[in-house]
Image 1 (tube, rainbow, N blue to C red):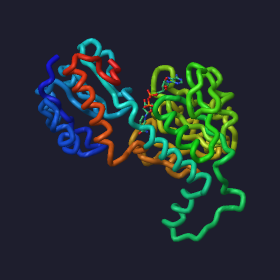
Image 2: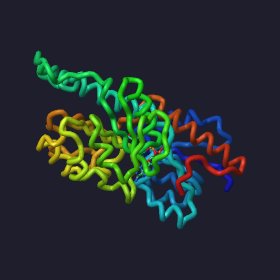
Image 3: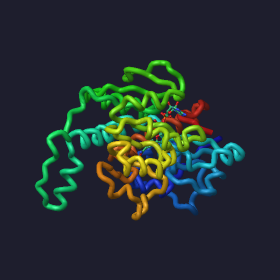
Length: 307
Ligand code: NAD
């Protein structure tokens, strides 16, 4: 198809100002404009965070997120709309966020920040703080996020193992387990880090049995999607001290409801689905969009095409 009008849907404002991307892409040989719901109709393609029905009339939709679990893939297929995603840009951001969680737990930084809010000079018990070298992190999902986490944690001296569907080795991972051996893999780790997409196979993957399989002194980290975890089972595991703590960027319901016990549990870090935030986000996404506009012009297949 001939690309003439590319819209930047205003839902991207949840992550960066739409006008930044509009300016970044201004040199493309197509017209680029920020649009709201009513403006989608007039575009051949849109860059967006949220799904809107009118997008099924476009020829191409680009998601600024890696996860496309909120898009009705069958409808895209049926309407012959190409869908591309932003997988590939979140390795360093998520890697550093996860490193931050682990350093908070090992150096007790989350407790110090909480105490500071209350003007409290409170030191940890002598045996609470530790250092990361010698600990093991088991990273479930060895794609962009998983590899970024492995690289960042590896640099901190953490031994990193991985869980994936095949057992082929992946650079940065000292050992790889097959998904069938998930419980054995997470059972030996000090930190379990979830980096798989939400699919029919991964929904509820972390259930009561998985938390049972974890060590009692282990921490659970979810930077993937809330529904990969059975949240009530996680809360049970935390409340019964079956695991030591958790760092969570994603939740079954977002924003995390005010009444959720996760807000108040000890050794739980809650972040508002911003683990991949960076002031360079619009440039990183813009790079993929620019590449794909070039590919369309050249009649080549789209990069990161999902449908
Ligand atoms: P990716 O496609 O690069 O990697 C996903 C990996 O998971 C692939 O290697 C795939 O083979 C593997 N996988 C799929 N199903 C699996 C299964 N059943 N068992 C084991 N491995 C399986 O994607 P990515 O960029 O690494 O992102 C992964 C997910 O993380 C996204 O789908 C999104 O939901 C989430 N995400 C969250 C944030 C955030 O802000 N917290 C940011 C980016 C991505």
